[in-house]
Length: 247
Image: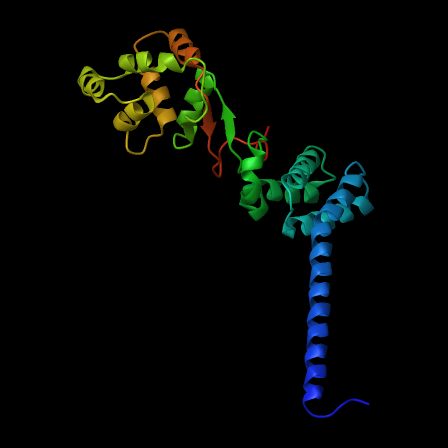
């Protein structure tokens, strides 16, 4: 027999509590299902990537559309998706697949999960991720000509020939600037920050000043490459990547 009066309120409270627990459980199950959803769709697409018939063509389009809206929960899954897209661009079933794949690759850097995992994807060649390398002079010069705002020196990474940089800077600066900087006691990084253009990166400054040296091209290459300076190309919409490369 259910007691009357105030006790009935306790039963109401208990029912509400049970309802909350059930709702939380359902929400957790839904979250678990969603966490498994993108990888399962990705695996399904990987299984049929080398099948080329009308049935697989339709399935690929459907799975690509689902993955376009999905968001991955770790960088390895996202990288798998990218590599799968690269494969499908190289070996498309037909025009419809090729167009869809290229759309996804061209906008890969806009994905929210790419932005989340970009640091874990450095040097992957995926659009939206940074490239770190001690570039050769010819490459660095080309990068500055194409993306002058993106090339930067990685000062936080020690490099073997860093002791040569102060000596080289003395050859790159006008005499008037050199006198002032000699008296300042600045480090090479501080020197460059003081004399580079307001919208010029430190990497672009170094390449541009070496390019203006009155010497043979081979000598410029030797000077720059003797430093072996670690640099980065920061990600931009059109900076070099495997995602957007066309041959």
